[in-house]
Image 1 (cartoon, rainbow, N blue to C red):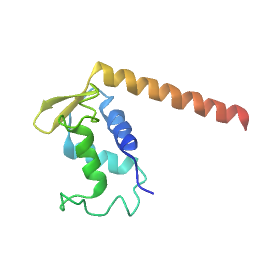
Image 2 (spheres, one colour):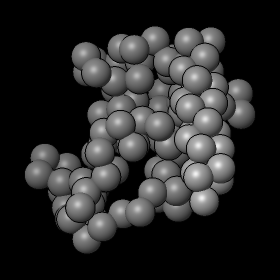
Image 3 (spheres, rainbow, N blue to C red):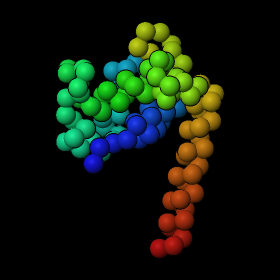
Image 4 (tube, rainbow, N blue to C red):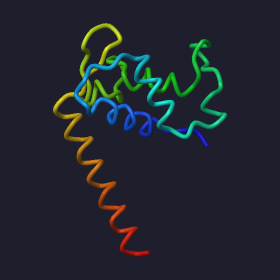
Length: 112
């Protein structure tokens, strides 16, 4: 099963939540470690044959020209060519996501 666009965007926000500027290459290196990439994720991308499909998802998530990207959602801003930084909105969304994960984890502990 392939990782979803949402999985990739969440992993990127987790990286950027440290407030530092990250390059595309740094994000790809870290996202690769964070996500359970399947063999289908590692297939060469259709349009960028020098990249795997999951890498293309990272590019799409960071593209200012895509309507569903983290840039378009106001979560990420450009900090230079190929460099990205989380915005206040991105940090807010990341914190809400983390709170939800913590809540669900708490439910799982109490139901065991």
